[in-house]
Length: 235
Image 1: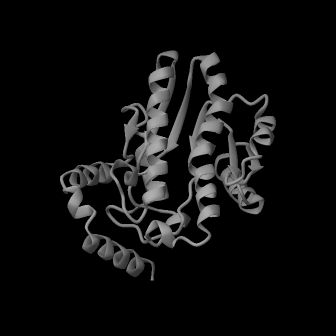
Image 2: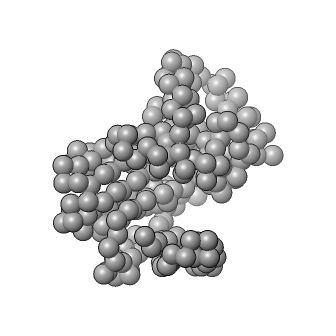
Image 3: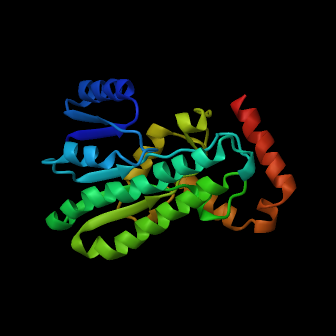
């Protein structure tokens, strides 16, 4: 199986592509696209013509900031809102629009959409990001109900902590997984259902969070502690 990588920075894409080709011997095609923009999808579709895409991973996403904050405290809020909606939500719908018809025709294919554990409950300090990930989850599970009988698997993956550049590469531990460890575990769960948290530790964490009353999670004291905790981890 060969690979297509789509992301914003061509230099980084080429570096990752070379690493994959050297490690696996697979062919890698790169498409430089900024998913905060709205005018990229015709070019993406043109570059994918003739390719038999069997697996689509919608992993692009962004936070306003890795530091928790209240909604109105975001700098350049109008631009930030548009960028987040385009990156976290529109990209998912448009990439599915491009790829899903071919999977439906072949009666097989897998689409993995990265949601977030923060989308599983109203999440203050990450309100817009959390809401965008609710969209990812509902869209994914709705599509699975529509196209699952045609042999297409569409799964919403909702992790909690994963050490990535978006989270400032926070130190990995039992709960905050490395990207490699998380991917290895989550791929073993592709056939589990239309919604997973991706790894055993995050499944347990999700169960624990469900037992906490929302008034506790939403209290001002809890919010201040969350801000302090994240700042300390990133310092």
